Length: 440
Image (tube, rainbow, N blue to C red; front, side, top):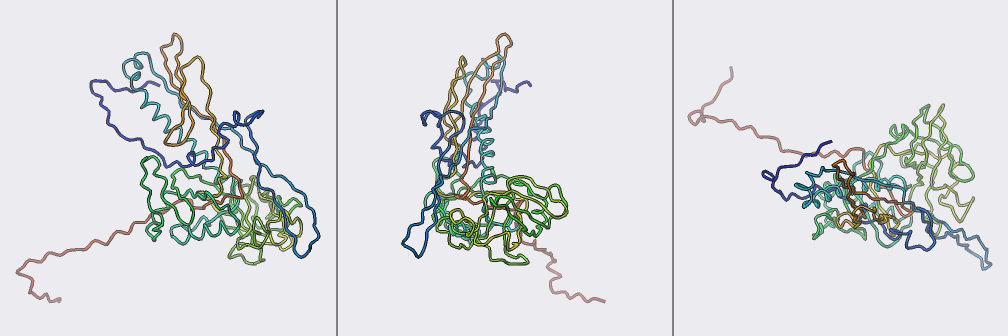
């Protein structure tokens, strides 16, 4: 494909700013393992493991110690993503148009690459959450809803530090209009960081237009009431009825809520607090981890986390009742857009610096606007009058599920602007102002 470069005679810089996306996904990622291949001695491969807090169960009413096992929990972070933008010039184009003005081309490519990476990172809001706030139908447009979101998040158990919320940019204006005065816009020196909108109730709020979209199964989109009839001993495989015969009944990433508000039968099923194993006020939820079909009204779905009642396994219990025995009712979220709420820096992003592309001139640097580590290198194809630039990056990310909550926005945000009705003015000649009109 040929380039379109402007003649120096007619071309002048307009000094236009870049059309940047609201991209906190790279900037706020925990970079502790950014270069783990160098930071961790003897680490081999593209994966690093890190430990999660160990869980125990307390015993009431006895001074006799009951010993329990200490099972270390781990999670992995794998650098398994890559992207690049490559573009070329002829020798003439490079000499006369590009050589002294390469920065603008590289910057534009960097902006595009950063948006691509941020969009992929936003998938963590779907792939690594099992709790949610919002039903996917009701707009989140009031101060009280976001306040309730934070309360629900903390009621289950949450880290006390570094609470962050990534909220949908197009859904935020009605919240501001509803009176959320706590969102005092930060006056940033860097316009690129305009996604930072303020702090409320110990949570830093960021707005983003890079929102992941989840396509739910038919059971979710039709809001079918399901009945849980069985659960396997591991707590990860549920048998449910009510979804008819449908090859697309459930999709990976769906969130199922058990004993949901409005169910035909209430069974009093609630989450236990993550630590303390005490009844919380939160309904039990889980993420469906694989697509599942329904046949003759019955489907088998795999879920995360394992749903375990207090009598079966006290240490790892997260539900106050045996779900399979009581036959709890359940519902799945419909199609939606996914924001993210988390605390305790559980969202990890690794973007190792790429090596020099010998023998080509190479520069690897950190983009100040997005926080991304990217490489730029330049070369030519011998004898073919082709000079090319490549901007590229590799990365990996993960999110510790129990530290996070999905913010569920309806599939589309409807912005309604109420315009005042136009007034109709009738002009009456002055000489007729006092004339009475009699209708015959």
